[in-house]
Image (cartoon, rainbow, N blue to C red):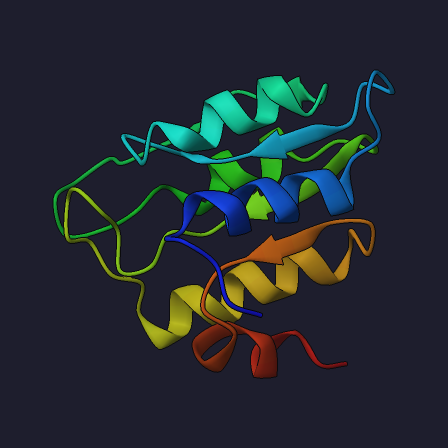
Length: 122
């Protein structure tokens, strides 16, 4: 699919994983691309507390991710490498995120498939 920049694809990801007005939640990074929150609001999904960068060299604390996921969580936006901090996830952190998400099959991941999807396989 071809689009004019990232904004349409972020919107498509949110719209295709959430139902308007159903209270579905999206977890997204903060600081991050401002369009994440605006697209979540526009889609009618519930904004979920965002994952905050703890250090310049990392994206977030993995215990924060586990605490934020609820039965209503439908999408995790994984900005990797992180913009604007430049933080990256180690292979071990990616494995730990995959392990957390295996327990929540309702959660889709929006991010770089080439880096993350193989780790989600059961």
